[in-house]
Image (tube, rainbow, N blue to C red):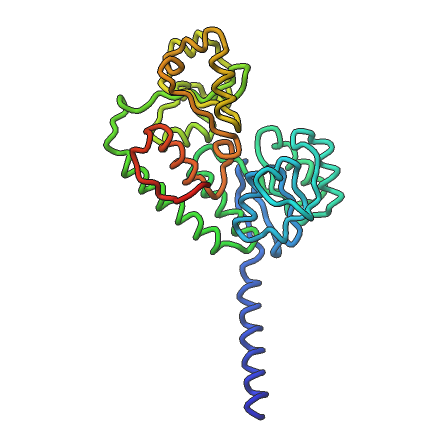
Length: 308
């Protein structure tokens, strides 16, 4: 055997061994955000994402080329050129049909309104992982599970490690602020006085950023409250929900009664788009850092440079 043939033979053996070891990672079984057992038997090649935060996770794991279907909402934060754009994610019936037509081997859905989608996909033998974290830690844990399901376990672990290190650094910077000195926050989600309760993952964002959600005792995700309830809890800062901060503040200051709250009088009004705080994704550390910077007005040197 010539040295060239020997070299080729060695390469073939190495490739074969690598393929065997790689294949041995599958099938993979994990539990999703609803506690369901989800099994994949091979690396998915056709993935559908039904919310922007899921698309962001898949892209950050290096799976953009395997994502074949997204919703129109995903286009705000991700490049969806060349993807099948499905209808609004709240229209379950239409979404089910569009997903089925794509014949994916993995669907990454979300909980809440979309929770029943998993059962519908099961009936069609379409594997579905429901992403539904309630905290930052649960977000990172579910990212690891998605990494395992998609053959991107190492990439997911690297992302999670980085997030955890940054979050620990932020926690260290905040540790000297006692609870009684931490800002009492109101996150106002809509003009109908929908706020965040203690079971929303946004509650954990605020807590980790050094704030206290004034409605953290309500064991709901998004309760609707009255002006009287808000006034009684007297928030020190109000976090509005709009892309344009100046527009949001101007709207709020025009609302009778609301503009008499202490936070309004002291000009402690900010607006944080749902593109950030509503997305449990691979950038949760950046979201927490951004909030802490807004809460404490430059008290800390940013861990991340530039915009998110």
